[in-house]
Image 1 (cartoon, rainbow, N blue to C red):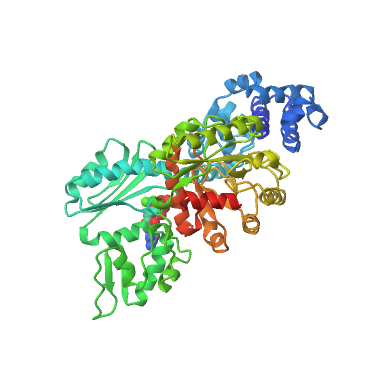
Image 2: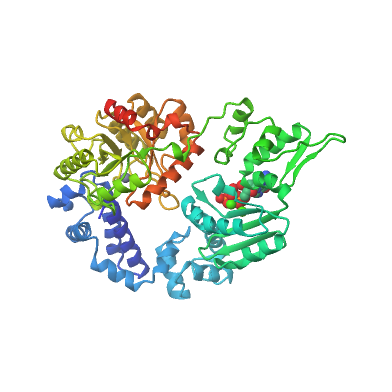
Length: 574
Ligand code: DGT
Ligand code: CA
Ligand code: CA
Ligand code: ZN
């Protein structure tokens, strides 16, 4: 178990004790211990091996034992016991702004509140205001915080949303009365997270479409429906809207419901300057005897506005309209341009498939090459490779390449930990043996921005480094990015001729697409990776390409569009 996780458990133990009204000294000991643990800048492995934990202020003999147990086994009997004593939902109450352990204790013991739902009901009934130490204002704040939290959690990863939307869209397309069908909104714009699904249908006969939509097996609840609109909640919890329009209106509605809202507003203003109002129903002349343009498809609509076609991914009002007016929109990379990918794990570290299975999967995808980059030794929780195991893996890869058992060429790589001080997890002598080295931050995530930025730049300056992995470490909807100055990191990557990956794992999508346009213009090269931990994960290449397109990237700016010989050359030269 990692330092960060152990500290979180100590913190949680303190909270659980506090909710149970335990001795304040004991509680404080755990809190101090958690903080002390995070402040250790030495490698925890070493400290524990030297039995030196107690040398740090705030860590006594007792705590040192508990930390060691957690580190070695990932479990702690005392913690399990505490968790059993307090209902799980009670801890969730701590996520509500303004609620600390003391208040949670009162809510739990006095009102028997055991979950966020209980809390909401009690607050709505006004039961909380009368508790000692709470009051009307606290109650209002709790309600507001609950609402805020609900709207935050209501988003879904693009990949999840797409899995849910795809079968529904296919069924809609098969209905006899359906002429056109599309999912619009953020899903079509390939945004990394999606709030709700927006289905749009072109049909002259909406009745059977509506009937199917609100009675399909996936529906959990119909929130409302008329003849041409419906809102439903699916079994997954996701909300889906449906709009049915006459086929001749479909293209206008398609542009409108694809959005984004900001993009829509901008093109509507542009249309008005030409003398037509533009809405989801069509163009309409605002002058007495002007006639609106006739169009057949989205391209025609943009052309009528004096714009070249803007792909949905770019419709974020981030300069695409100005660029389309000048005819300078880039020709975006496509999934079919991809010839392989480099960041992939195997069972040698924390992947679920063997080296051979991964290469076979690359063959199925008709890729020319695949990189293997298992974790390095400091990522012990991910079973990182020792130097010895790494050297062995390199040999196996060389043999496999020579055997021609698979079509795809295998590049021998490594996802090498960037240690807390910016040095790499292996010596140059070992790293030299590899075809490429991805450097990533996996621990000491709480460093301040300056330290973290310096740390990453130092790793980028290492002669053996090829590229930076998941630049900010964010996990979408779960964990914030670590604090880092990306502009400085990007500049350092360019100055040192290093690549930055676009990690297409749907949870990561890191480095964020919003940075790519400017970075690539400055000369930064991208590698779209899947960070696959299984053969199925190789499909994440699609998410990576989505983000690359949102970042305005072209084929030439992404190295894994290069044919084998060229990318081999490029990796060798760096
Ligand atoms: P989401 O669902 O939060 O991930 O984001 P979207 O973009 O899918 O937004 P949604 O579902 O509220 O609306 C779908 C599209 O409909 C949106 O992208 C643009 C269009 N739209 C919605 N509200 C307005 C509006 O007030 N004005 C304009 N011009 N367009 C709107
Ligand atoms: Ca939506
Ligand atoms: Ca919607
Ligand atoms: Zn990683």
